Amino acid sequence: MSVATLPIIDAAPSVPSLAIDCALTAEWLEAFLRDELIERRGVKSAVVGLSGGVDSAVTAFLCARALGPEHLWTIRMPYRTSSAGSLSDAQLVIDALGCRARTIDISGAVDGYLQHEPEADPRRRGNIMARTRMIVLFDQSSKLDALPIGTGNKTERLLGYFTWHADDSPPVNPLGDLFKTQVWALARYLGVPPSIVDKAPSADLEADQVPAFVETCVTTAGIGAHHVFLETVADVFGVAFEHHENSEADVVADGAAIALKG
Image (cartoon, rainbow, N blue to C red; front, side):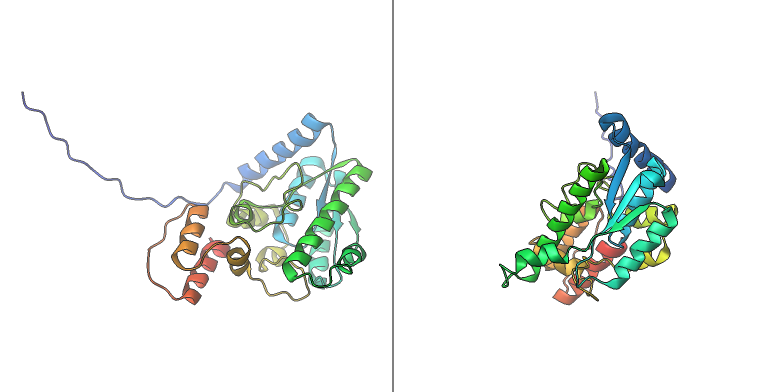
């Protein structure tokens, strides 16, 4: 009895898409917020640190839709070297939503500690600012009987672009499973002001800071350059790339295209 030999057919490799159904995503995240705050915790209000960037703007829009703008507190927390543009961009969100808002300058708190550590480098200073903002956010949540809501996205988390005991602290983080490109898509769907959606990402630790998202990921997260960097970014985004020899500048440029534009 002869056994038929079947041909082996290799399926063509596919590149997963990062496209999302924005309407469905928004509906799901709004339901998620209502469930986490109202159903599980009995809390009716949310407090969001509003930086003027797209992540906090999208988070605020979702909270306003889920809970109502009257149940959303947005807190702007500038440092003395922060960009004035960040404050004005945050105000655009406040005006668009009609939510409650407050501005608390963290310069005194940060400088009060740094006067004892004058040699602190920019990374330490940035982490101190981030943690100070979280102290403010949690204290305000206690005062206002509102839950602090996180604003970090999946790209930042996987690349290590966040501060321990700061960005990662809020108990609920609606954007935690969205890559940056998906956050941008959701922002456009929700009606976040275009000036916020289209501006380059920045940690806003000083005025007129030059955005260096990829460079920061390389130095802060310990991600090596060249192929290791590209492979890491590709793995994070679940996309494929062609293995090729490049100069360091070309590698960083390619990585920036993947990380920032998707």
